[in-house]
Each structure stands twice: as C-alpha cells, then as structure tokens.
Image 1 (cartoon, rainbow, N blue to C red):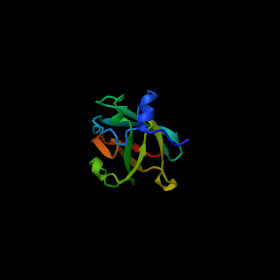
Image 2 (image 1 turned 180 degrees about the vertical axis):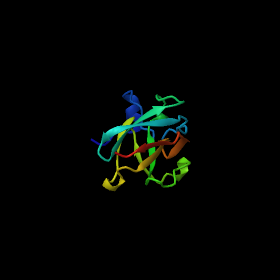
Image 3 (image 1 turned 60 degrees about the vertical axis):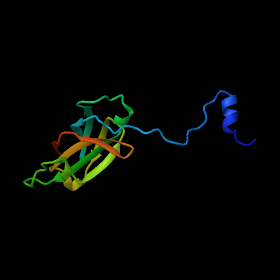
Image 4 (image 1 turned 90 degrees about the vertical axis):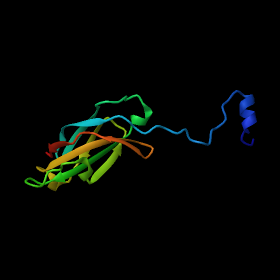
Amino acid sequence: MPPLANMDLVNLDFTPHDPHPTPSDPPTAEVTVETYLAGRHKLGIRIVYVPGNPEDKANRGFRVWYKVVPPGGEPVRSPKELTESFYTRRKKDVVVFDYEDSGKTAFLAVQVEHGGKKGPWGPLVSAIIP
C-alpha cells in the first residue's frame, strides 16, 4: 500500500509528522570535571553540574576541551587556549593520551553543547597524566 497521507493519519488518531524541528533554547548549565586514574595514559572524567538543570534537554551534550603541557611549560590560563576536544553525552568518560604524554599536565574544561549551540565554560581543571 502507498504511505498514509496526513488526512489518513488524523482519521486514525495519529499525529502527522512535523517537518519543522522544534527550536531549542541554548544550553545554560555550567559544568565542571573531576578527574580520576583510569589506567596508563588514561584519565577518567566525571562531569558535574555546578549551576543548571541536568534534566533540561539542552544541557545533555558535553564538549570536553583539553591541552597537554610538558613539565615546566607555560600553564593554560584560560579555557579558550585549549586546543583539542571531543564530544560526549556521557557524564563519565575516559580521555586516552599518547604514550609520550605520561608525566605531563593535562588542562581540561567542559562546555555544554546542544544543536551547535554552546553554553558557558566550566572551570579550568588540571591533572597529571599517569
């Protein structure tokens, strides 16, 4: 049979497909990250909401930014200096570093991200890579 038309869907008490996406608000939550040892060359991260509602759908994706600095190197002063990132929807994840990065300092910051819109920066966190 051919696909059902919108009028057929209404007659059957179904809701017709809406071709226009519902606009969403930009993310407003601010999150921080707690680090823990996850293995050799791996840092585990836990994302913790500082202010904001974790149940709000706009606050469910996270862009984790980081930069590796060698011992004695210039520390990162602002999250805008972080150069590498990955996206996750998990509140607990693992960052895997190269073998050569062992003993260096990793600086991390997290932004809530949803639909290409970014929320405020979380605080800058540093940890020694195992």
